[in-house]
Length: 139
Image (tube, rainbow, N blue to C red; front, side):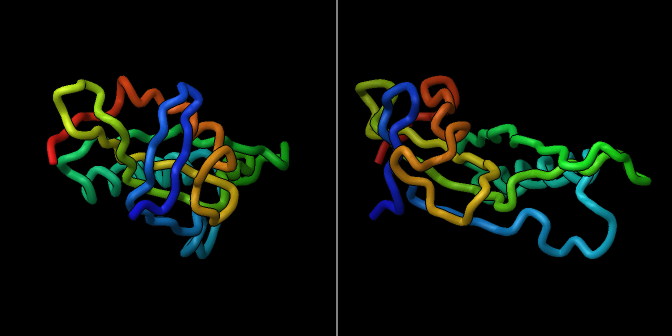
C-alpha cells in the first residue's frame, strides 16, 4: 500500500511508501533560526536519512529560506526554513527494463504537515531528477 502518488515535473509517477515528519524547530529552546542553525538542521536531516536507509540512494532537496527581518541579531539575520522536515521512501517503474522497480529516499522541508500527493506536493519535491538519482532493484 502506498501513502500517496505524485507525478514529477518530468512526468514520471512515483509512490510514497514510507514517511517520517517532524517540526523543523522542535526542541529549540534558545536562540533564533539563523543560517548557522539552519545549516546544521539541513545537514542533520541528510545524515538521518542516510543512516535510516543505508542501502538506498538518498537525495536532499535544498530548502527554501525566508528572511523576515533584515535587522541582524547576535547570530546574524533571522532565517526561517519551512516548518516541517520530511524523509520519504519512494518507488517507481524501473529505470532499466530488465529490473523490477526503482527507489529513492528523499529528505525535504515543506510548509505544512500534509502527506505529499498529486499536484499538491511541494514543487521542489516534484522537480527531483529521478532518472539521475534513483536506483533500480529486483523484487
